[in-house]
Image (tube, rainbow, N blue to C red; front, side):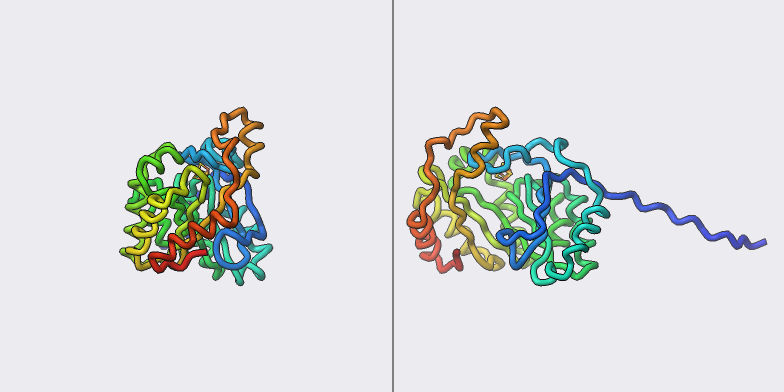
Length: 253
Ligand code: SF4
């Protein structure tokens, strides 16, 4: 006798991840107006980090992708002019979570951007990158010793990711934080500019001036803040850095 009972479908397990916060109307993390998800957890220890409370992987809020997508849908009409960015922390510490968010965003017709330091095992990053329309790659310095001083880690994985993004023609913006007395050495900037000029997928370079707004978080967390006496980067500092990038014919802002 043939059974008429419907076959039981295996339940898809809900994908979860740790986030620090969301911003529903972001304007600085990719094109247009964006829903920005800041993930929790970061392996870097940037001296200028304005979100040091993002470091520890399991201290944020545990959410499901369903919950995030339901919230994103509230803003869907204006997000069509921009999209969804996942930033951090370091999003690639939770690759399955981010890939699922991006695939669900694509089902809604929304543009996706990944803001990453690139400090990740390349094979783990590839499936996320495949679901990403635009990568915002933060290259925090170029001279290896300066990079390590700024971040406490090596630059090698970041450069490997940059080369992979070039190989697969993934639209990419490079972001560089200009810190007076730390990353502003012309040799450091020219080295980065020369490297980036060799990549064919880079649409633009953003020079982000170091600011002092995150300082109070270090104090609240009782963490030693080495840049206490470092001044914010001035508009003139930024223009000098931009001029160095332009020597290499880069589109820089
Ligand atoms: S990569 Fe970003 S979140 Fe991580 S330490 Fe550096 S500035 Fe902070």
